[in-house]
Length: 254
Image (tube, rainbow, N blue to C red; front, top):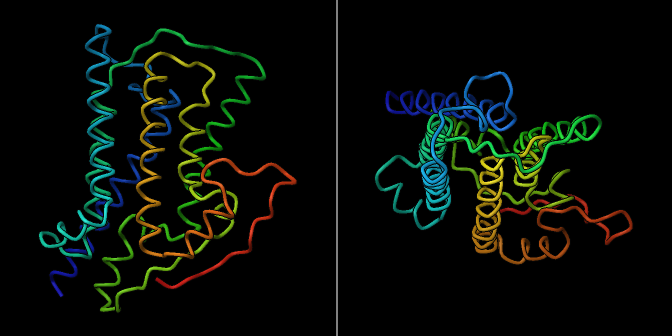
């Protein structure tokens, strides 16, 4: 019981760190409220800024992809309890995000800048992107995705949950609404600097690689059910009105 309680505390702490880093990510990329943002920070030469920012983004991308793979999880759970595997992934990802916020070097040359109604429109899309990203996690299982449900289940002595394939709401429009939301948030800005553009390009590249790797795992896990879903629903861009109909919600046991 003591071990289960420790696992719960660990899961709660990991979730708290994630919540803080997620909230900070929105104001960091949007240049709101906080003193250190994607465009505000210590001055560095261009070469140094490019090198530091690229290394930071690369470390995050490698960790985020490698630790999400099933083969790594099987190895990793020989070291950490299975109930804490997701919390550990979330915690390390959150710390690496915080490292990016802390060590990011702005490159402030302007790529584009708009005012008036285009500024309002892009700012609205920016916040809509963060909202889509957050909403998409609750439409599947937010607390399982970020490791809380696993540690609570162990504390309660509940049986392992069978993974379920479900496609609610946003998942009937695109297969990866979380990533769509992040893409909107990273690209929609009324003032695009060179540093922000580097961030947007690098994260976009990672997202496209990441979803390909994730879909490979999902096909291996759910088989024909996921293959049929891929044929019905686009990856990131919703179909225009009048396109092929989207099938109703389906649920399949793993």
